[in-house]
Amino acid sequence: MTKYKLTTQDLRTRNTQWVIGEYQPELSGEGGLCGPGWYHYYRHPLLAALLNPIHANIDNPRCFEIEALGKHKDDNGLKGGCTKMRLVREIELPTVTTIQRVAFGILCAKQVCKDRAWNEWADNWLSGKDRSADAAHAVADAAADAAADAAAYAARAAHAADAAHAAYAAYAADAKWNYTTLLAIANKAIEIT
Image (cartoon, rainbow, N blue to C red; front, side):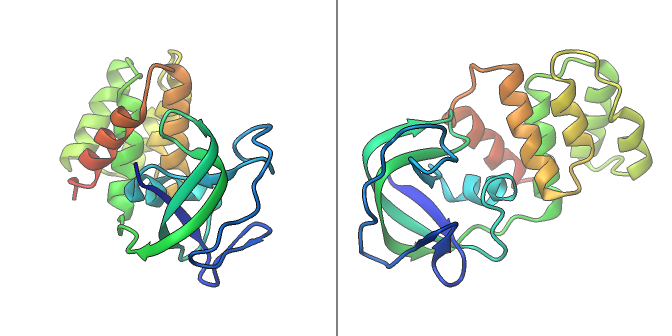
């Protein structure tokens, strides 16, 4: 399966300068995915666009297909890592609107939030019936179940990071998620206008 990497415009990530076609030195594969033992990647360019704000948070990123070798570690589709990597070719990063980011956050939270009032607000927002800030503020703290964090992030999701945090919080509330679930939610979100 092809994997994807985001870089800055000058092909940098944290302390790494990338060169298309050249392997980076092999890493240890120790520690968490955001640590120095892993090269970070996404399993789909749409997820890279949606989740970048809470990972590298690269302004105006470039997206590359990569070759990912060595040990692999996956966070159920939210991000992945490998110990050896090279950029293969640049591709266009999907453009995601603010509305689609918010929809992503809401759809993620809907997977786990059972609060009636919050779900009514979410359905109204997704349908376009009521996208007012007042309605969002009214339900941001309303959810009282284990998915409250996901619901609150989704209700505040006018900021890209809040929408992506909603995905993480929803996953934390229901760790049975996987890449297929997350990608299906992302694809549904980009249909919202």
